[in-house]
Image (cartoon, rainbow, N blue to C red; front, side):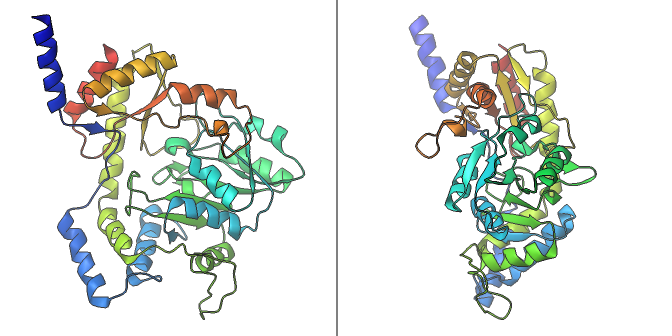
Length: 373
């Protein structure tokens, strides 16, 4: 009898609809296809087309930015930032990030140096930066992890003291604020992502936000093979352009940006309120500014607990993500190992739970119940 009951339970689980860690927020299809009609009529698919230009204007208006250079993806955005600042040397960054941060640094001929993180905010610990500065250090590249603002003032003070540039990896940071303004406005350049998993997406895409007009113009030239407005090649650039097809999706989606942002925040706190008494987990702490609540990471008391919970969720067709895992400083195929004990420890114990616009509260309740068992 027990075997029959277990078999029936397994069959029910197999029939359950899968719940993934995230799903893209998408405008109604007909609104997207309406924009595509104009693309077909004009026959302009790329090369800084009218929809790309419109998207940049609308992003600036929505996020209250002075400039936004939209590009093909967030990795190229980081590469463009490094190139625009003409950096060559060591860049201090966080080991608690996606591998693209390090890949971009290496592709631009620079050397990543890892600064360990604060165990509560999960961001680069400013108190550990200065010990890593050498004669070869040219920049600091912190990450606003899961949209949680870094200590931008402390980092800015260190950079000015040592004559360093600051590039923020703001892949998660659209919708986050500090000191009453967009988090994207800090540093010499912030590179962000418009990937399908982000709060606001163009399927694939990214962008750079520059601290001054000179850098803004330089980024636009780099994006298009180094061409200036007169089509003369004046920069060592490359192909970082976004297509009109992707820009159309961005223009359709941006109308729903506020709704998506509010939905994430509401669900984030719904999770947190119902998991706050679970002694096996803790949460990322916000100290500086206001995050965008774009992810819901939980930190378990041990990797063993995490693996047990992950297995249980997977049995119910729920697929959270070990994000970021492993700590990037341990990718010894691409970097020389540099100890970062806090990042290495956190990366083994952190799990991002499903969080997206179409995720039902009933599904969240199910996830919460499984975690609280």
